Length: 128
Image (cartoon, rainbow, N blue to C red; front, side, top):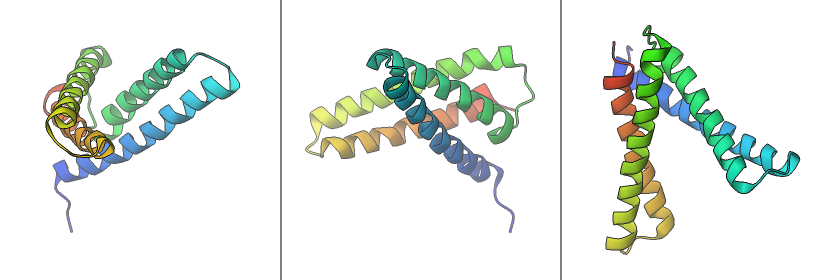
């Protein structure tokens, strides 16, 4: 059975996302517990490491991009920011205009982030 290319990319994107989340969490934990850094420095460091990991794996493995790194890295960062802001907007709307539990709102807004991030990276950042 042959899997549609977009479905396969979505699965790979999910695998990268899970590994990226674990890596970010480990880096934050190490920064806080072993290096005694501040919460904010640990958070920034974790997210920067996660963003770099995500770029490398999505560029090479998920989307198999042959484009120059310099032409894609800025796009990747911009797409991250756009996706995050849309997720934050969705979270705001869910928290303020529904009666849904706040944790469920967080999870629902993550779907907005993930879907937006995947589509924009597939069709803009790493388009073939």
